[in-house]
Length: 71
Image (cartoon, rainbow, N blue to C red; front, side, top):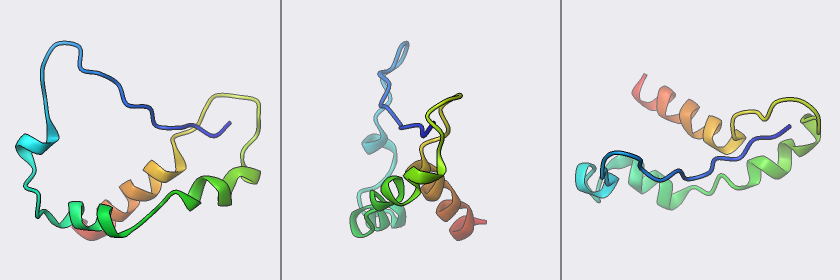
């Protein structure tokens, strides 16, 4: 079962990414340039309808890219 990342509201604190990561950060530029939405459609046939939901494949690709770039 293909998972999907769902935004979850904060429970005990107010954390805003915009307050901590500059607008000109390298990863913000990558996010603006690259569209990873094709990943879910391309991998849809690889997932079963039964079982536990997986990590969102788009999120996984983003994590792999960050790991590669910042190793």
